[in-house]
Length: 356
Image (cartoon, rainbow, N blue to C red):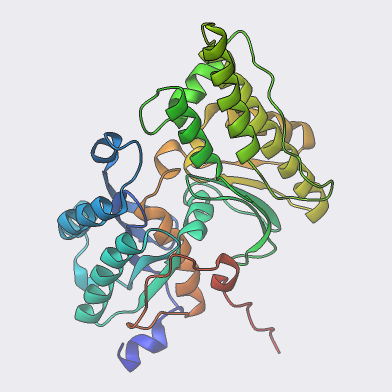
């Protein structure tokens, strides 16, 4: 980056080209000032992976290679932005599938180097959290409940861009558990929407255990609940009984939601949160949204949820999170490596220096 660009970076608004290739969506967006989405193009691989019942990493990487260049061109065209107008290129550095991350990383580094503009390696979960900033004004301190295919975490944000994980899953993530239960019930991938629909429509319920863990813990565990669902299925088969699939789906969903909501509301009280941010792919779950909305309304705490299109992986959310790094002038070296285990807390934006 030239000396002139170094001087102005972080002191003016940003126009970011943002790339997301952490799993099975190839997405590129153009985002202005971390708030305004000028374009957000997404190529989903769901149909490709459905036949395998889940994401196949090697196939995901190859699909990203096939589409990334076209997606970048389309994002710029839809935004009506010339490459020379861009402030920086943002890309998901991690976590995610390493092969998939590499594709986006190479594309972003090449573009940043060719245009002589900064590169911003961005945390995938920070993107999910700050997807809310694209449609809401975030007030601090706040608590974020992250629920996706690979992550279930409670994160405290004491200030903008500061992340402290207070609870995380000890085994399966929520989205992962939904897919495994759906597979056991013979639903196609992805299974979450099928479970959600059945649970909402069911008139009966199969009561299942709640994994609260230790009294003061904010961690989550879903392996026991998944085993309880499998046991109910096997028991019905051994007895030759017709399985009430809807009632079982409702029991599973209610167990998951009770724990997610209960721990989120306790975290809000303990950490003095002024808002609860719901984020991640499972944020599209209607049952979870309704339960959190009711609890937050009773507690007098606003619930922030992105629209459905911004819940799943997308480039716009990466642009929103990367804008935080742009403002603080924290850029990434061109020798950046894909990091499947990138720490959210370590990615936090540096605290602003006190005014003397």
